[in-house]
Figure 1 (cartoon, rainbow, N blue to C red):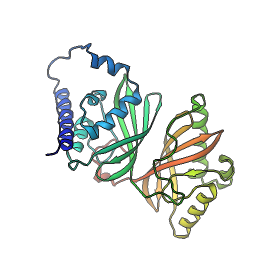
Figure 2 (cartoon, rainbow, N blue to C red):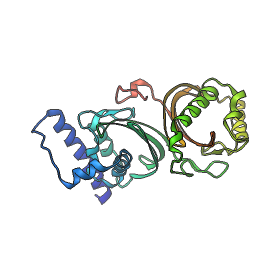
Figure 3 (spheres, helix red, strand yellow):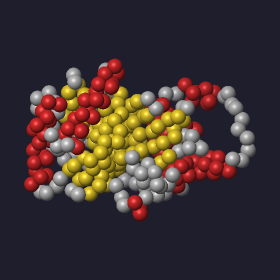
Length: 294
């Protein structure tokens, strides 16, 4: 067995042990004041999440402690609930396959959302959302899509600016982007489309759509000719940090129920850039937990 597969199995085994020990409530908790505990307390939520995701690749065991072992609600429908489900998923990984590169990480209150390039049962791009309580992770949502080639404008699903600015404009930007999704993607008020952009300027990272607002319109027109429809039904979450806003929605693509995660970059009060992942929601009979996708 190679080193990478060994470390993944070690991490998975540790998770299973922690979950089992907690469930059985064996032993008594003892307060510790060692340097590791102090370091953990000083870490930001974003730092904890990035470290936890990277541990999927490296097998580092310390980040497991950033999860509340008594309460971890899982919304990835392919993974069983709790720490034990997470451990079982890691054990199923093919040897020497896990790669994790978190490109963007943002924080909104008790939530951290990330944009990550994975090799996780194959190359994927994913958005993850983690909710914290009392400094520990208690809930997780995600949306994964197979990594695609660059779009007609040469942009990948993950490249572009990575650092947020204008933190004092977070709430205004969240309001703007939510209204855009409601007007255009949920309610189809296309007469309002141009008002959300600076002319034709718009950078697009969807693998099938080129840059510019006119490029978006052309792509949607081509889809319509092929009988491919896209309709957002419900917005579930709007999270933001400065000029970056993530909207989590559900709807239908080509008649099938999907989860849409859309990340927008706002510039001077207008939408300037967009990344997304689209994931098919499986039939309920295939779910490995009962928490729902959203």
